[in-house]
Image 1 (cartoon, rainbow, N blue to C red):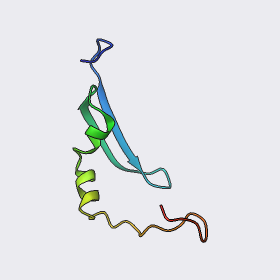
Image 2: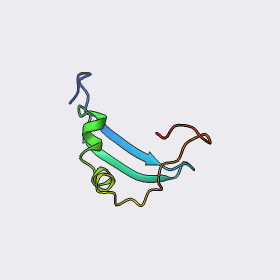
Image 3: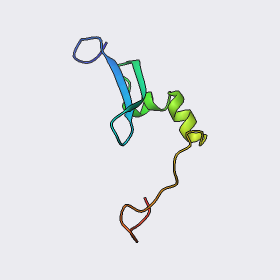
Image 4: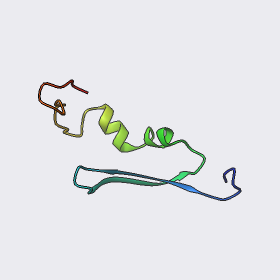
Length: 67
């Protein structure tokens, strides 16, 4: 139940560079923050434990800063 006096849910989706859904989480209470919902997901746990087989970071521009 939220401040607008409605029931609401948070829909969290993660997509890749080609707009393919790689993770979807639906059902958290609407009053929850986005970061709070994300930190409770299995995706977040796998990300923190470096289990996602992500490529190493590279500069966006040749010779540019790493982010």
